[in-house]
Image 1 (cartoon, protein in one colour):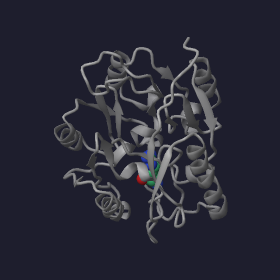
Image 2 (image 1 turned 90 degrees about the vertical axis):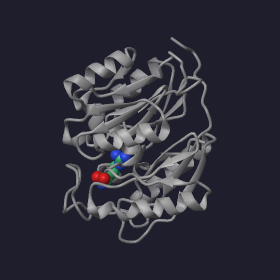
Image 3 (image 1 turned 120 degrees about the vertical axis):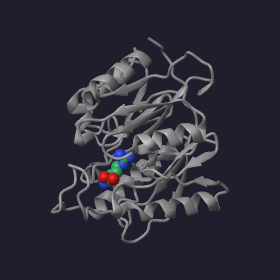
Length: 281
Ligand code: ARG
């Protein structure tokens, strides 16, 4: 067991939950009669941001827009890799205007933004993992979008079929703990990932087993606690406190779990990772 894992400083894009609420139901977590405690949501989100900064990470913000209650879920707006930005096209009409808001931020920050033709929800379904981009489908992002992603980045893009509506985005069922040096290069050194196998079709489970034989497997309870919607810097894992078994497994593997409670956001089907987009330069 490794005794010390090295963190790498990250750059995150986030959106303050000033207009966060549950106004519509586009996943099984969302209830029309949900009562969101706005003050608690604001405090939980601020704690996440302070925790990132306390661990040395750079955090940038995009301005929230009234009438876009899910805009706090920054991960869905793009995938940024090697300084290239692949934008989003949301499945739900209610979220479609978010794409323009985030694209405007990226353009103002000096990036060109590729606008996908197919439905694609950014890092919600697109997860860089070493030599590959893992790409979820089944509920939101389409197979056609996976092809666009591969063509745009030139990185082999592995489609994975999600089958459980509670885990409608790939980032609710899987996350990457560390990126080996030489990511996306001809390097056999696979990153460590954690996932909940039953969220995937049989074939996709086999693909994950082949590519990541040493993965950490999470229970349904950990997944339902949003434990897989985590952010890792290679050492610290910012994780929902309810994912107790997963927290123990991470500790055994030499990672340092940092619990951050975003329970108000679970009412919209989101957690730590959903609120955090990584900008990879
Ligand atoms: N209410 C949002 C939706 O259903 C939550 C998005 C969560 N984001 C994520 N990266 N999983 O689209």
